[in-house]
Length: 138
Image (cartoon, rainbow, N blue to C red; front, top):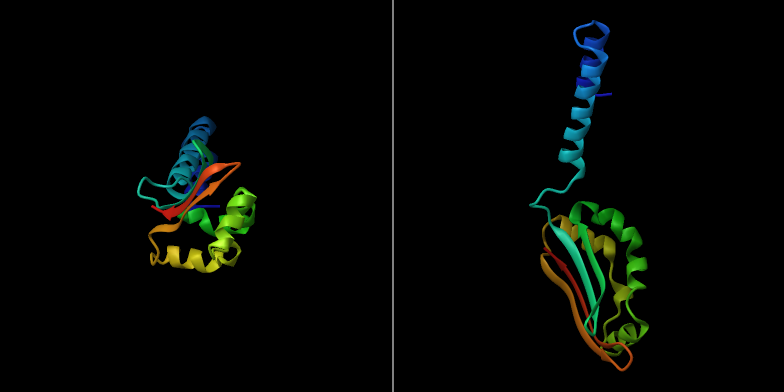
């Protein structure tokens, strides 16, 4: 328990403030914590993933870099959103997305060594039409 919380509880116990006033102070502390620690600031960087097929946006993901370490555990799920035909077309061109080392990528991004586009792929498919995959840091 934080020092601020203990002080508020002691003030209630000593009768310096009412229980309702103490509750208001505790709520204010919680809101302050959420704003400081949990919500990305406007200056936060994001990993952005965009997949469009024809005129339709199939995938539009924005991941704060601060959450990227957790998100890398789910990278394989995101890879399943790419149409099989697009993956085959990429493999024909020598691009194998399964070879991406997400842990290393997170380290590079976290250290600020990678910025801008990481992946930029355009493919044409008879069924899906034009498919574009973009992954970038912004």
